[in-house]
Image (cartoon, rainbow, N blue to C red):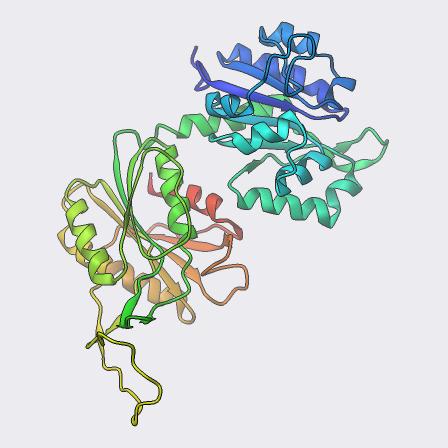
Length: 400
């Protein structure tokens, strides 16, 4: 088999919609590509396509209920979630999208989704008004934010007799999307990637600090993307509340800029690619109080600041031939000029410019819009507004 799906484990989720007939073709295509497929169907889905047909094509019993009625055999959604290399839900109805987005685990398909550790591809299918409804769009935005891959429906003739967006993408195109994902997975195989993420906190006293609003979401999305593509990833992160999931990621927690620099220096020699995504505080207090500074003291405290080390510039100066260093620039004005200047001054191979001026971009958001500049002078790449997971994929695509 030449398909990147050969030997992969796929959970195919089927919901109760007329587009379920297309799932039969999709199942055949996955099996033909060499994948092992386990079908999980909702009770409503069985009204549209029979488990006998699906079982004959997959050569596996179809799972629908939590247990088999006549034998009491338990179907473990946890085991299915761990077994799968990916989960594909096609068609995904408006009802199931809502349950997935809000964790309403009242059937086997949704509980399997909530247990899945692998990438999830969702192909919605419904009438155009349902698709366009704000609740459906909100649920899709939530699912994107969770890192799911949404395969947008087509415009076309619908079961209602209307014409519009809501027709499930054709099985052949869904196959291409999933194959493309797994083909990309090995593009960083054997590479070691160092990523910084989140803010740094520079202590004033035991309870106060100088910092910024960075959540670490962009850096963590990059870490997951690089690990998914086969890299061994080390993340050096400041104080964040996020979790990393991929087993190929090692996490090093730090607090200050000096601690982050020290950790990066230790890791950099063995690194092929360094992505400096952290929002490192530019300044730190020159003196730190060992006890809490009291408001009631006679005079207002004066905090003298000193410059923090520039981690990206430090690594840019010492990189060897073959190493790549990527920087980030968050700007509020003169954005392009400042990004280009940093690209040169810090001896970077690439810099990612994002703005703090947009309400859906910058710190703390689930979405971003960036412009990517390369040191070779090629035309900059503008991504447009996307989820940070999708932005991470774009950045890695350009880097590769």
